[in-house]
Image (cartoon, rainbow over all chains, first blue to last red; front, side, top):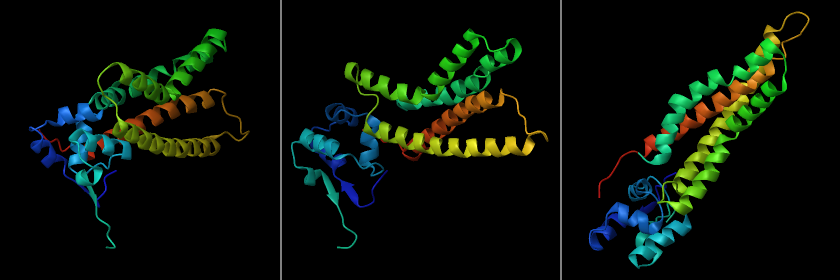
Length: 73
Length: 149
C-alpha cells in the first residue's frame, strides 16, 4: 500500500499553513484523518486525484508536496 | 479507529458467530419438516444477504458519503477490495477442501445427504466474512501508528 520511493512534505506544509490539523486537511481533501496520517507517515500512497486535492488545499503544485525518487537515478 | 474498523470488529465478533450458527437454522428446519416454501425462501434470502453483504457495504457507504462527513474513503475502499480478494481465495480453498472431504468420507455407495451442499454454502459464507474481517483488521493494524496533529 505504501511506496518507499514516495516522500511528502505534508507535515511541514500543515505547520506552515497556520498549524493546520490533520482533521482540517482531511476535511478539505475529502478523506478521513486516518488516511492523512497514513499518507504523512508514508504508509499509504494516495491516488492521483487525492494528491492533487491535497496540493490544491495548500495552494501549491503537486511536486512541492510529493517527491518521487527513482531508484535507478 | 474509524467507522469501518469498528464495523469490522462488530462483524468479526458478532456477525460471523451468529451467521455460522443461525445460518443453518433454515437447513435444520428443511431437514426436520421437509422443503416447505417458507423454509426454502428464508434459506435463499439468508444466503443472498450473507453472501453479498460486502457489496451492500460498498453501496451504502457510497450513499452515506454523500450525506454525512467522510467516513469511508479511497484507502478504506482499497483495504476492502484487498481483503475481499483474500477472502475469495480462501473461499475457493475451502470449497475444494469441502469437496475432497465429502469424497473421502462418503459411504461405499457414494451417496451423501442433500443437506451437505447448503451447509457447505452457509459455512462458506461464514469463512468468507471471517477472512475478510481478519484481513481488513490486519491491514489497518499495519498502519495504526497514530499521529497527533
